[in-house]
Amino acid sequence: MIESLEKIAIQHLPHFSTQDVQVDILRLDLLHPIVSGNKWFKLKYYLEDALAQNKKTIATFGGAYSNHIVATAYAAKEAGLQSIGFIRGEISATPSATLRDASNYGMDLVFIERELYRDKEMIMLAESKQGFYWVMEGGYGEPGSKGAADILQAADTRAYSHILCAAGTGTMLSGLVRSALPGQEIIGISVLKNHMTLEKEVLSLLTNEDRMKPFSILHNYHFGGYAKHPPELIAFMRDTWAKENVPTDIVYTSKLLFAAKDLIAANRFPGGARILLIHSGGLQGNTSLPPNTLPFS
Image 1 (cartoon, rainbow, N blue to C red):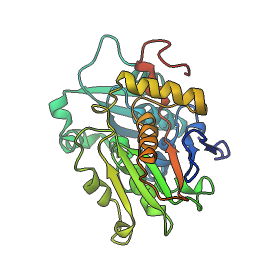
Image 2 (cartoon, one colour):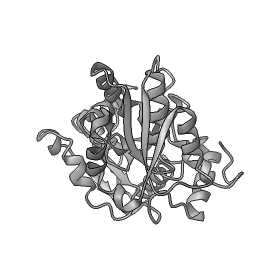
Image 3 (cartoon, one colour):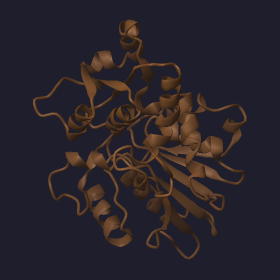
Image 4 (cartoon, rainbow, N blue to C red):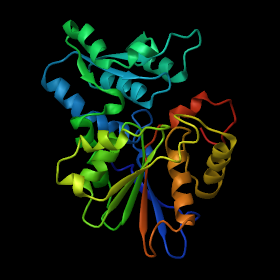
């Protein structure tokens, strides 16, 4: 599916940097137009394992605007596997662009009432005779964390003192902690409101040794909750594009970059800090916005 990682680049952010702090961004979004950003990293070991077990179908979970759903649909198709997505919520007469794309890539969509969706173990048990290979929402699990640990090997990231990423399920965050070098602090920006179990979910993917590494999760940059995008955030996204030529999405990367700028202004980082932001892709989430809301596609 992905022949090389050569498209990934580190881009300097002059309008985020100060006299004392240098800020760069790892452009994982350049990796692939569909399996964008961290999605390929989180999926690759699952796909390898499914093929090794001679599984025919990848089954996973997600919402109507889930980057993970469309990425899994495309990646499974490329790997010669069928896919099925268990989607949170009722079927709509006007499905999202994400679900249309996933369906076009061959994914069968099964809609689950929100209350029932919370019990994924029950859904998996009900489908146990199908022989599906299951991937949890957002790629959460050991293979997803292992894949995310490879992100910091995609470029030379050794010189950075602080590495920041957006966090949904915490899968990527756990992988970054796993691969962090001594002296590197990992900071996750939670995009879900009141997701106070996130730290526990990250810790469950780490060894006792990795749990001792410096990492933290900040919960005050969600802008009202998952995919919420008040005018202030949209204005920030437009300004970031104009000044840095970096496209962001309403779910993850806009909130990450906003948090980074705010933390730098608040002197959260010591003088001489070198900060790396992880652009985790997911730009397709912007398709839910009215046309021309953003100056980039």
